[in-house]
Length: 349
Image 1 (tube, rainbow, N blue to C red):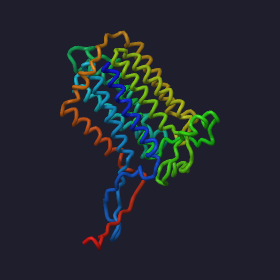
Image 2: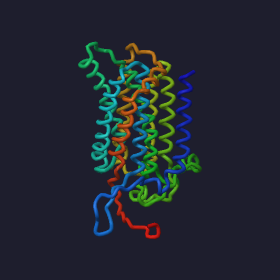
Image 3: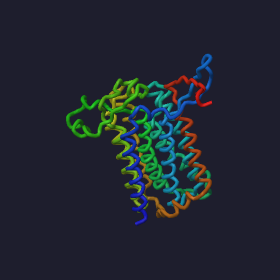
Image 4: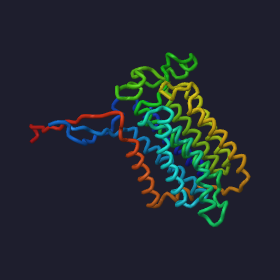
């Protein structure tokens, strides 16, 4: 019963968050969080660095994903220090891959791709587990590979679901105009479309689709990914690790393939994009891993142990550091600039 209460509580929290975000974040004033003056430009003005809500929501998404990872791995008695090492390795690699793959596919040096980071993570995590299992520990095969992979898959799904709020705020990863879609799509989203305002949003300066009714791709992705992540969490806590892993990967990566057909932003020169290919490779790769490794014994999950592990200053500081580093990496806008002017309010002296 405690497992169901935990999942239900998270579900209610996410519903409230999304209900606010879908209505609010497409607005112009939810893109730039703050501007920091850097150097003087002339006598009165300063050149500023724009800090974005995109960075805030990516930081929130990353911290949420790591939170879920810590709870689930601790629930199956994986040492917390090992989870720190795994999470840190994947985050460092993922942040780098998100820019490198976007540069390779889209030829844009100041763009991030979660799809690319996910693909790199799927390839690297089993290797990291293998190295730790066989070269760090004296007792090989100590680490339950499928449950750990399932924990990462759930953390990814929920993290990316929350992270799509960043895309809504910045106006990236945007959908096609409803007027250009099939009538079924138009009827499906007629009362739930997104309308973005503000010339600094990517949908405006790249696609010229500000003020237009567009398919709410980011919103659907957020709802779908978080929903499957929560359902998979319940399966995980009940001991169905392979089902949890397969469910999460099949749903998220199948939607990755389908959602690309509803997007209007640039995704590379090919009709069938590199991200769709990565998603299909991810599905077959995980199916192979489950086939090869599902026979191994897996520990029973204990949610209480997972939650208790969070009540530790080290864990709290780790989550805070993850959020801060992520914000500093993704929240500094490279595609917008600002000019700041300061003056004295004479009647208040």
